[in-house]
Length: 246
Ligand SMILES: Nc1nc2c(ncn2[C@@H]2O[C@H](COP(=O)(O)OP(=O)(O)O)[C@@H](O)[C@H]2O)c(=O)[nH]1
Ligand SMILES: [Mg+2]
Image 1 (cartoon, protein in one colour):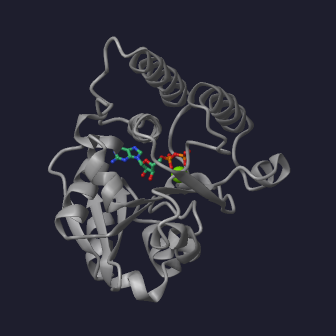
Image 2 (cartoon, protein in one colour):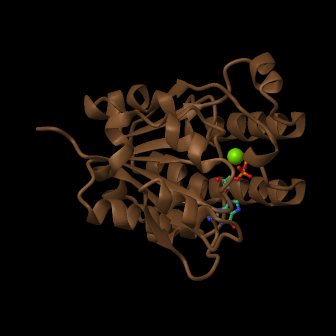
């Protein structure tokens, strides 16, 4: 039976880049896109509606994690078998959607990530600021060591999940902030889920990146805290709420 794929876009002030992101999404999925607007101050909602994208608006800004909670709740309630999350900021190559989800369709992986980190030269010439690159590498090496995995990055905004993954992970208990993405992956590792990746080109330009240095530092520290929670959970003495008890 044909699997149902829903593409979710957690949007915040994405009016300038939405059309381009939308254009790159393969035609067969254009009718199954869901955009959740997190109280944007620009014309994101108007543009999304004009493109025929199903749009849900948060009356107030809930944050990046809060936005994804709505995305996944709605996608699961609409009986998606596979949910692709892509930032509507045109940073990621949406033409690769098919390739990204293939291992999920074939039952080989539970989560797929589009990794921007292939070579340092490629990433930096793609425009990622050197301090973001350094932070990404540091956190990724640390995460791989603690989690016992070998991913090339944990920080991408192009991801795909099976419905089983979204049903098993307690994502409603994750943060409403950016660390949501980390809690999801760390919780997935704790639950023994399979995480695969494909390389995707990097595209950094002013409209594709708004997170400031200080927000990034906070994100880094929250990521380390998430790893500490993982280590605590592994002791078996207490299991923090972001994990499903074994
Ligand atoms: N829902 C929500 N999303 C946000 C907020 N701030 C930023 N974002 C989104 O978070 C994503 C990642 O931020 P971005 O600045 O692109 O990070 P970078 O590309 O990694 O430097 C983008 O899709 C933004 O639109 C917010 O307050 N709420
Ligand atoms: Mg971005």
